[in-house]
Length: 304
Image 1: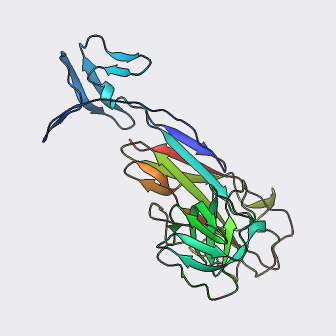
Image 2: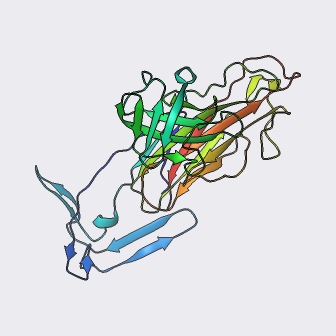
Image 3: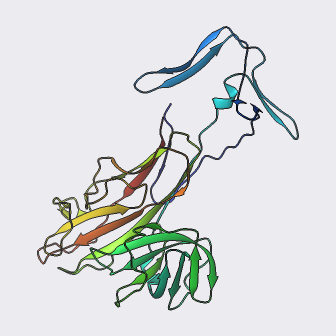
């Protein structure tokens, strides 16, 4: 059976927990034992996997105030995978320059910290624009104007710890919508989103993205999708790029279409796996004036 969770911008769901016991010694562990008359440890087909046991007695779940008993050979592997996905975007009105950055101590010092609070996500952007470097984190503490995050994800090894220009910023990342703002011909713009995945699926997970069509102003007006792997400042183009240790579809700008695209995956359990998604756009003098919009759905599935 294939489990999935989807979110338009923020979402996440499914919470279950269990306590199990096993027999152990110095060199061995018996997670479950049973006397029965048959079964198969792993039956598979293209879309399904079955683990079955025949002839067990008194199996199932029993509970009391302080204990839970999962009786039966298959109870130990009959766990319910939990899937958690959240997505959010940068808030443009919280843009503030940063003065210092440390990837080792997980800190960033901003010119003014009043827009930030603990427990919220932030994006650090160096050289704002089509080739910007971006990292994301979740604020654990604030001391003066120094923000400390739980970890950095994204382009951690590429971003400079010493901001050199006047286009290096930090944004609060709690918006429901990614917004480019007012567009001008040949003035490229970006906006950053992020994912956050947690799951106990032993085989890991995969995240996909899918739009409801073109970035469009009307049924007859839309921005051209990027077609040459890079949104450039001398063409009408729109696309996205992803960064992070679990990111896929990396190394190029891709079009955001109604076709499902894998953007993140892992083959093991996850505890707050994150990637940065940078949406990019450039318009030309011939681009029709309009309020352009697009819905993007993110889909999280457990791997089986």
